[in-house]
Image 1 (tube, rainbow, N blue to C red):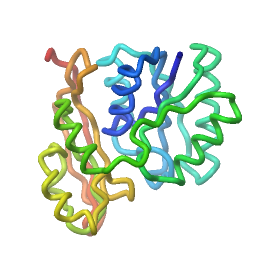
Image 2: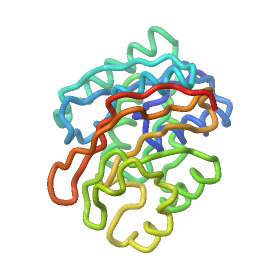
Image 3: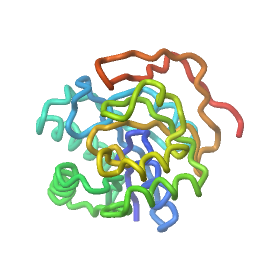
Length: 225
């Protein structure tokens, strides 16, 4: 079955991609929705431009559509991108990396139903700590690129998330270990399907408020693994 991955560049969409490949899906393209509004309800904001580099590392075509990130209206931009994938790549399903966010899950499913597509959601309702452990086992290199919660601070940025599994186990009653509550956002620099690894060459850390900061990647490239 031909499938498109709803792709943020973060850990969950990359794990969904890996599991889709292992489940036998024919991955035709990645779909990235780039929000202009960092408070988008649906889509990953920090460093969205790097999905182009990730697509090259994966050797998979990328469809990228901009959205103003306005609640509900951004779904029309997603639908536009999926329609492009249907026309260009004849996809029959979409894969998403949602875990327990019913807000996102129900909206993805609604659009898929309207477009007569299947939905592959391999992480749905899985334990978040187990997912982090799976990332470590599969040798994902995944860093924090945004933090916005108590217990987190700018020192976490550019650090590997899987180094903090114990931290999230200890604080899971305060923090969602997957970051689905907006506690943090991630960026995958390497994973089993990448043909090359992403190397960050220049960056800055921008403080946005108390317990809120962002890693702004100014320059990055692909290097041999």
